[in-house]
Amino acid sequence: MLAFLHAASRERKPLVGPRLREFLDLDPVERLPKATFYLETSDTQTLLGVLFVDCGGHPRGIATRTARKLARYLDGHWFDEEIRAKRFSVTILTGRRTKIAGLKKHTTAAIDAELPWATRPLIGDECPSDFLRVQVTYVPEIESLLPGRNDRPHPRKGTST
Image (cartoon, rainbow, N blue to C red; front, side):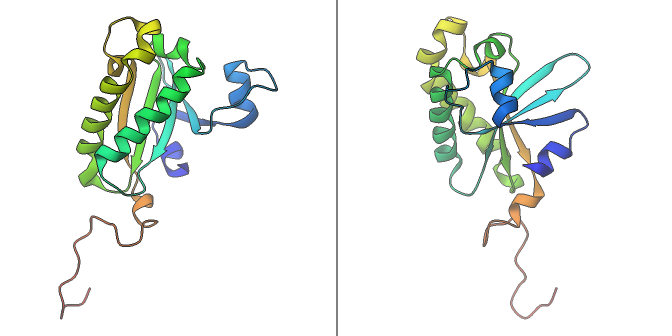
């Protein structure tokens, strides 16, 4: 997550704990969402993002779990303003370049299939993925944290690297 936050051409800052509580204007006793959020600032706007990390598994399963977590966040009405204004990003970090397209496709489809009921009060009959931006970002540092899972070609027996 730190590699993602620091690798941007735009300014990205983590938004957790007291900073998240202040941003969401929550009462001290109100439960905080359990996720890593960030603010990304450009010349034109500030975007609120939630980070998920691909720790392996099939893109379809990751997409389904992501949509279910988003449904819980929507139930809390924490991000209504950002969603209405199209300033909310669902960001999945992966250590495998080969999974980028599949993760984006399946996550967008899962959001559109599972969240219309939760987003209807906010955006009407519009497509949820038009308001919840799905981004999948390759972070090479993740690959080394997943034993046995990488995109590098395996050396053939009898050859040295």
